[in-house]
Image (tube, rainbow, N blue to C red):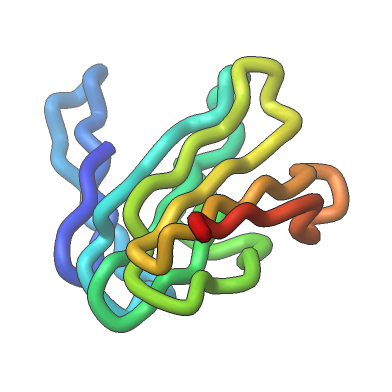
Length: 111
């Protein structure tokens, strides 16, 4: 998987085909991560949209969407056990969300 302007790209290793998905991000997709079980893809955008989306890895269709950061998104990761989603932003915040209820558990901002 790779991100670009408004697109997520998936290289199908079986066929060699490069598939692009238009999605709900309104800017450059800067960060991607995939869950340990391969069922969930996470994405965060940088320029005009700092939301964390969970597009379906097979179709690109957005499922849940997390609360956006106040400024440009930077990185998104899912924990090794697949339970927590962590995202960061240029606003110096770190958001930790529980994947089960998709609501922020806690947030941290640099003083």
